[in-house]
Image (cartoon, rainbow, N blue to C red; front, top):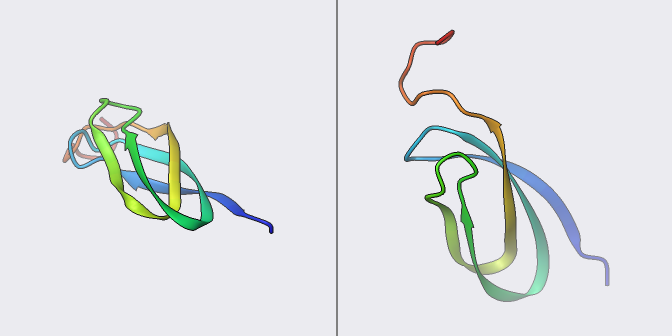
Length: 69
């Protein structure tokens, strides 16, 4: 059985960093927790058949800051 693997972008609610999060879709449900690559706070957590594995920093701009800062 082939498992689907890919990435998604997720924005941290705490620091505003854009994280690229890798995941794999499994037939069974499991718990996952992924921390923000920018500030270390919990970015995603839960239980499901989509297992989020790791995050990498894509963009880290100040939350609410005007573009160019």
